[in-house]
Image (cartoon, rainbow, N blue to C red):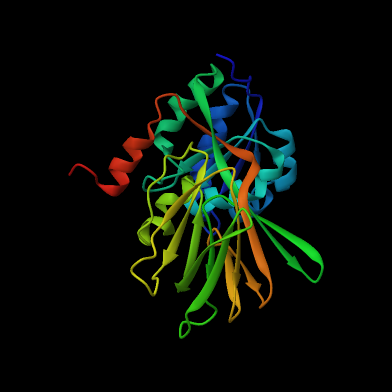
Length: 284
């Protein structure tokens, strides 16, 4: 087993959930029993009345991060930690998530396996979006998806799309979703896009309520890059459903897979298709 020896971990709790305090204390005791130091992120610490450290510090000093909450907490943790190249383990506080797939009841037995190096680390693609605003480059990263959509519910937008600098398509409707394989089971799936195996090096373009029956989702190789702009109106760029930026007329956004990946920690027996079957109720 080539996995590194774990000496210190960082923990991020779901915001506005102070009832996680007892579970966190138990988590800390579990890892402390293996001589593993636990660092709590400062906002999480403030929420439950404990001492904490800055997010940057726990990323720099820890061997891996635990995101304790749901998929939203997990996505936020992934995006904030992306520059630090640190693995992340997701523990769900409630129902099974696509991303936070370990239950709290499984933590004690899994902690023993972590100490023995009996775990796996998968690499997932991230999207990189670049917009030039006022001669300055604005760079954003998404774990699930980047959505280009209308600024008003009463309007539709034209989204001109180039692939590798060559004209590809013009979408007319509510917008376009660009998603990673991991994000294919989020907004993309609701809009009729394909489910992509999360470790593949591809990304998908899925139109949102297109004003034409001929518009269909497209899967592109990871080495490709796209450019998107609106020809008649402003648009919103929404990153992972968490951040929003306005795209003015004449501006464009360039999207590609980032050169770096994000690392997710799982049980050795983790099976993505088992998660799909449970969340999507396949086979029932």
